[in-house]
Image (tube, rainbow, N blue to C red; front, side):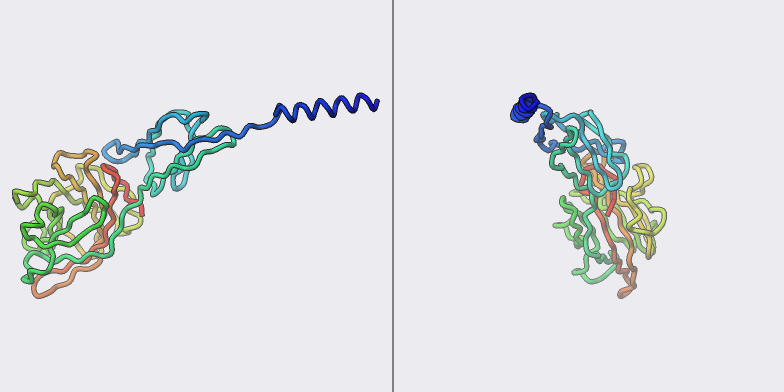
Amino acid sequence: MKRTSTLVVGLAATLLLLGIGCDTVVTLDAPTVTTAAIDNGAKLRLSWTAVTDAKDYDIVTDDTTYTTEELSFDVTTPSATIKVYAVNGDDKSDATTIDCQVVETATLVLYGITDPDPNHPSGLAFAADGAASALSLGDANKAALDFVCDDEQASVLPIGLINAGDYGWAQNAKGNAVAVASGTDYDAATIADAPGAYSTQEGIAVSGLYFLWLDPTNNNWDVQDHFAKAKVVSIEDVGGAKKVTLKLGYQKVGGLRWLVN
């Protein structure tokens, strides 16, 4: 009896040394993910190359986790952050993170074009990184301008935002446009209206919320476009002209209409 017990113990030790019956830890690389806005900017398509030893992939949005065996996935609900993992059973790679949060600027002040002070800016311009600037209407700035704060055009009186390309400046042929958002809650505005609901000239009002479509090539929607939201914090009379303070958020992912804070 004692001899049989010794054989059993020896066999168990051999199996342990051979690793038979033990779980194998799999080291997975993080997926290399590319993104593309689709459906006129309503959705974001994620694509990646196959990760060695991965069985499937987890896509984690702000409020949901999805799992797929495919090498692409369409996220249909606006999310500030998306994480993609390669998965094999209990083993998971580090996350590849896609940042879709809007770039927010400090409140920006613009003056109507009738303001007599040449140092007061009347134009709004967004940089590639999403930073917003208030610029004068001088020739050196005209190519950069996206919108003009206008208190002169009858179509937008007493004050409005007008596509800079509408002024006929040779160096600016943009097709930017504005849409009036439903409601006034800046944070709740998580997706801009689809193309078709915009005007290149739109009057604005205190506490109003607006979507901005930046169409630099004036060719309808494509992935070169960008979307933003603007909340009118205040409108003041200054020397007969208007002074407008705006809160702005800009989506830096090309073509995407998500505006999540």
